[in-house]
Amino acid sequence: MAAGKEIRTQIASIKNTQKITSAMEMVAASKMKKAQSRMEASRPYSEKITQVIGHLANAHPEFEHPYMKEVGELKRVGIIIISSDRGLCGGLNTNLFRSILKQIAAYQAKGIEVDICTIGKKATTFFKKFGLTIQSVLTDLGDAPHFDDLLGSVKVMLDAYDNDEFQQLSVAYNKFANTMTQVPTITQLIPMVASNKAGMDHRWDYIYEPDAQAALSALLVRYIEALVYQGLVENIACEQSSRMVAMKSATDNAGDMVDELEMVYNKARQAAITQEISEIVSGAAAV
Amino acid sequence: MSTIQVDIVSATESLYSGEAKCVFAPGSNGELGIYPQHLPLLSTLRPGEVRVETKNDIQSIYISGGIVEVQPDVVTIFSDTAIRAGDLDESKALEAKQRAQEAMENATESQDISATQAALAESMAQLQMIRKMRGKKG
Image (tube, rainbow over all chains, first blue to last red; front, side):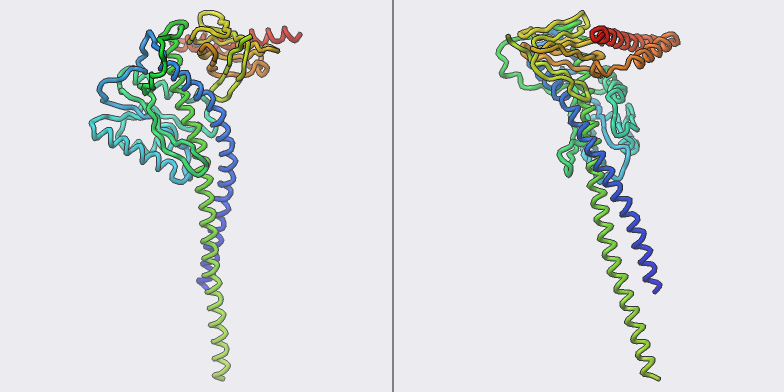
């Protein structure tokens, strides 16, 4: 019964793994609820600020902010990549990175260089290998990132844009569609995509305080930060739900494996018993 | 009497949303009083108190800076970090002020000085607001 013992140890070890994955599934499920409510809570801000930016696109500002101007030739682009800090969350990061790499390849085919800013350990370790210029790195944000945590990284990218180091800035993250679906998304932040100016029949402009430039800068910087923050909290919700799903399927798979191994073990046990009996019977017959 | 839709939001939550008679906000060039049918306005805000006057009562919400956008029938205030006025912890504000002052004494670079000055202005505004609310109650 040597084979039987081996199988039994294997079953025991798979059952241990199953316990771990099911615990991780439950942890991820409870974290997902929190992450989702955090995501919902931050939505009003980004929705309202997007609305205001929409108004602004319809106004006729006396001062044209650099973030709203169309750029000439693209020589370099910047991408803020938001990933998770930890693994074991299914294909979440891989899918995002694949779509980013596709985008980067498309840029490079046109002779456009790419600068990146990584948020999360996974993106940092992954994109280190590609020889891209990493402008800034932000890791260990935890499950409840604070708005302030982002400001440094975003500022680095905005400063680089102001200095004309690159002519376009995008943010890449996983958009939360539902618990089962996360959509890798790359959104252009600046220059802001011009919205439809039709429908406004009269010319109007804001009263600015203290002045147009200061007010617009403050608004646009907050707009960009809000979009990046929104991307970050959505990515965290995606991470937790993706981990929950991955761990659930791991637990199910472990269950299937245990069933199969138990079947093999029982068959082997039965075969051994049958053999033993036939040996005894044939031994008795020989006497 | 016409009313104006007021939304006050911070990055992490919606602080106020509803109709109001008028709104007062600490604009960077001075206190702003906004009534319905105001001209479009875009202003940065200092740390301080936003007062929303509704039909029945007056709500005050502390903001630590932000932006206000005014359309004739909508006011949107973006607060940088907004806590409800009642939640303010005076000792924390004092500590922060002290730290800011200590840091200012030790600061050498100009950037540090401006950052700590901003922090100081913020905690001063918090303190002022707490005193005011105490005065109302007492």
